[in-house]
Amino acid sequence: MSGLVVDASDLIGRPGRSKQIHRGVAVPGLRTAVGWVDDDAVVRLDLTMDSVTEGVVVSGSVSGTMHLSCSRCLIGYDRSFDQPVNETFSRAADGSDDGDGYLLAGDQIDLEPMVRDVIVLAIPPVPLHDEACRGLCSTCGGDLNTTDCGHTQTPEDLRWAPLKAVFADLDKPAQH
Image 1 (tube, rainbow, N blue to C red):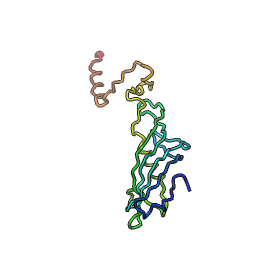
Image 2: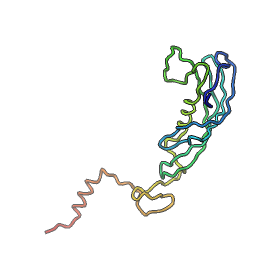
Image 3: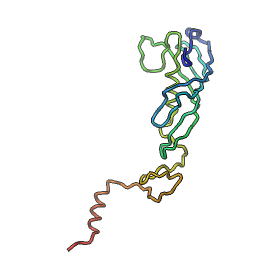
Image 4: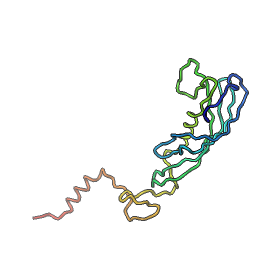
């Protein structure tokens, strides 16, 4: 039995019973464009499984360390996460998966889909290593946090480019 599959036979159909889950597991393949968790990194699960009429409620926290890439300057950095969990695992009434929530598989609960969802949702969509990050120079690509390259950082509005070209032609001296 993997570290993410839990035997729930003592909980299912017995409302009021509880079970504690405290363990560290590796969850390989957690990677997005801006953040990831190493395949061999330990993700800490501190969960309580409570039997309810609808199934089993899993609550607690999932914690660990993720690697991020700053969206402004691309520097890599690490950040810890500690995400709360409160999910219900239940049997589908008609045997189909409606895509909402998590399903019980017999007398076992596979926590992996829930853990993956929690961690991926913890990865910020626009990570910043520092709120004051100045990013990269749009002209030369230099890191503006460590150097002043001297280029202007005011973006040019390309919609005015044709009009600027006309004015540039008007400013040229006439040739005879």
